[in-house]
Image 1 (cartoon, rainbow over the protein chains, first blue to last red):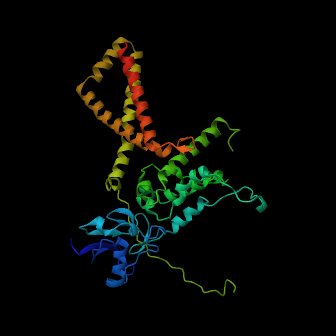
Image 2 (image 1 turned 90 degrees about the vertical axis):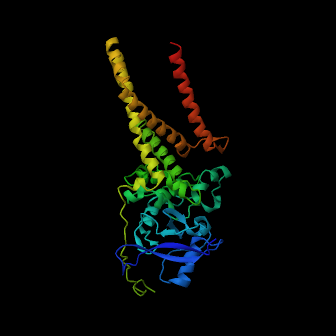
Image 3 (image 1 turned 30 degrees about the vertical axis):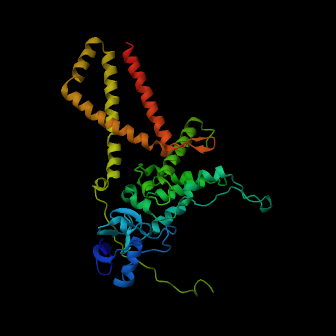
Length: 247
Length: 140
């Protein structure tokens, strides 16, 4: 087996280039190295100017998402050995503006995330003396998988709607909305529904389904959005058939 | 320390690069192509819906009209077209069968019904309806 493998890394240095180019780096091929380890090798030993985000190296922080051979991938969880003989093409996440090399701008995403009120919304908080809001294991089970999201944005890079309609709130944010809607302690589903029924909300989703395929945490955003559409449609139907019933 | 006394940061203005999305984006990955095919094959659904309406209209028009309808749909070109759209409607229906568990969450006795069972129920429904159609046709 070869003792090196080639990484073809997208470089974009805005002060030098008007569009990204590729630069090849030969890195030691080690079975226990993930692509992120190879990128860190390049940064430490070959070219310190290579820019990319990373933190935990264990699929928790969600910082190191990149396009690997065209697929949205967490680079800390993708081993070099899965890509022999190479070269391995590493690019920044698709559909996001590129700031530098492999670093993308996620400002828009942060703004979108806020519009779905991803926190427990209560009409009225009960007094502390009444204790905590209890939840049964079944109630937890109904939303737990949607709560595993690490905001790695792989789902945005997999969603062609995000590319074509940059205003689309997008898979992770809608899945997170659904995570709170399904939470028995939450009372904010009506507020979220009005935010997500708009032009940039769930109805933009055409159910390509790739968000769920690339999700490293099995959050199933595609499922969350389709189930949410069902809720939205039912709500609309009720408001038409029973104008006195729906608020 | 008041807000003014804090260090003033110069706003960073990145010179972003935005990659344009090609009009051929749907050919870049098979799942995208499959998605576009699933959407396009809804034309096949429309075709068979119109065909049924046409047939009903011919039926309403009397025996001569219905005979005319039969000669028209039995032409080789029309049969070829129907076979083509049959492929389309099968692709459309089967891909949707397999997507159904994403939208339909059924809970029985506190547990979520497995995805496979929901897909299977679609097939069972399809076979049941088809069997009914065959039975109606055979019992004439």
